[in-house]
Structures are given as structure tokens and as C-alpha cells.
Amino acid sequence: MNPEAKHIVNELRHKFYSNFAATMNMPVLITGTSYSSNSPIASWMDRKQRLNYINVYAYTAPDKFVPFRPFILRVAINKSAGRVTTIRKGQICRGLNLVWDFELTVLPKEILDFLPWIVNLVEAHEKGSPLLLESPPHSFELNVSEVKLFNNAWTEKAWLLANPTIFPTRNI
Image (cartoon, rainbow, N blue to C red; front, side, top):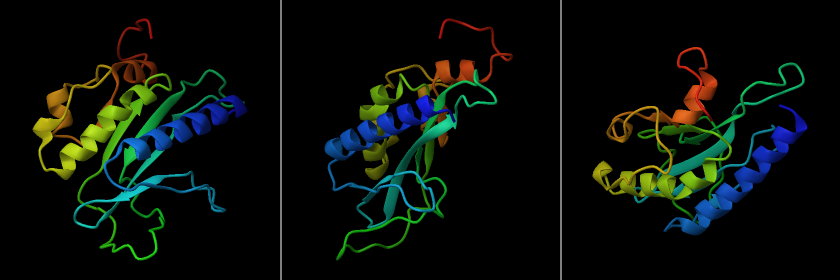
């Protein structure tokens, strides 16, 4: 990833996590980078005292070898369960939430628009009612009703940018 893309990812990640923590109706812990080069994550405990976490990272990004590679981000909830996370002292934890995960692939300019939708998704899942899920701020490559059934979604623009030979290129 080139330096400009790294800077943009770090800035968007910081804004996303800060706003996510402020918007959630429960305490959210934001970790810093570690020596093992893991990116920061935001984590929280659900009502069943399972640890959940969200990770924002570059799915694809330009670098010095492929400078025109599409710049696409991913928001992952409870993916890569082997990630080491910390919990607050005195907090009861019954382990990682291995029951639910979700990935959303977006363009950098779309990610902050999705913050309220992601919070709504977490809350709808916590309440066990996918019918509470609101419409997304940008159209998906799949129908919103399908999001309730699957564990990943792409925005239409991210999908078209990542798969230019599958569909005719439109203004992205």
C-alpha cells in the first residue's frame, strides 16, 4: 500500500472507530497498533458477555508495483477470530462471539456514511431481529433483504470497481 493510501486508511479507521464508540449504546474499547503489526480494532461485549470486534482495513489499495489498483476498504465484524483482543479489568468475558460475523466492502468515500447503518446492524443482531435493519446509505450489489441472510455485502460502486470486466463500467 502506498503512503497516501496508508494515511487515508488510518485516518478513516480512527474516525470510524471514534464515532462507532460514541454511537454504540455500550462501552467500546479501541486498541492501538501492536508490535505484531495488527491494525487497531474496536471491541465490545454483547448481552451474552461475548467479545465482539470490528476491524477496518484496506481490501485492495494502490502500491508502488500496481499504482492503479482499486482502493477499496472492508469493515469486518467478528472475522478472523484468532485476533488477540483485550478486555477491561474486572469485565466478565465468555469468549469471542463465534456465532455471528459480517463483512462490508466499500469505497473510502462511502465508509463513514455507513457508520449509523453498521451500528444499526449490530443492534438488530443483538436484539435478534434482522427486521429492524434500516436501508443502507449506498446501494448494495445485492438486495438489502439478502443482507439479512448472508454475512457479507459489497456496495455497488465497490463491486463495480473491483470487477470491471464483469459489468460495464459506470461512473463511480
